Image (spheres, rainbow over the protein chains, first blue to last red):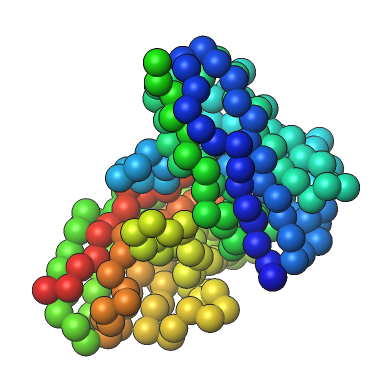
Length: 120
Length: 113
């Protein structure tokens, strides 16, 4: 089955760190650009970050630049999001999503998300 | 950043009637070298992740019912549900993938009248 499964969310204090993972299966993970998108419960979708197939190209939303790092392990078919210096406004459901194969475009496959709550 | 603005924020439509959602981008998302609009539409039902409906502004994703259609070019786009079904109750988002940061519209909630 083609799917993405996120993990690693939870309750974390402001200023803390968390690493999210996204396990891919059912497709050739190494062929696809990958993204993180977040959503505050009850609010809209916000793009967070993306990475190309060989990790040479990454991009971030201004709101997370310098605090979050996206990476991937193509041998393990896993996408990561290292989140440091977390703030209350980072509280959201974090989705990983699949972009294009070799060229980045629309997001055609989404995981179910993992909830990150930043609170003391 | 390209700002995506959807209208209306919500709409209530009778079963079997047509629903139309508009999306306007603050900049052109038509890439002239390949004549493609870098615009997609997603459907999100409560408690579920988004689902891709339309890409390149008008191409329906595999498995999406043909009552869903996308149109428009440049900066103005429309998602149309030709005959609303109960299972179409959801929030719909447009998104541009023309330039980073990718941006979404604020969402349009579709309900049954």
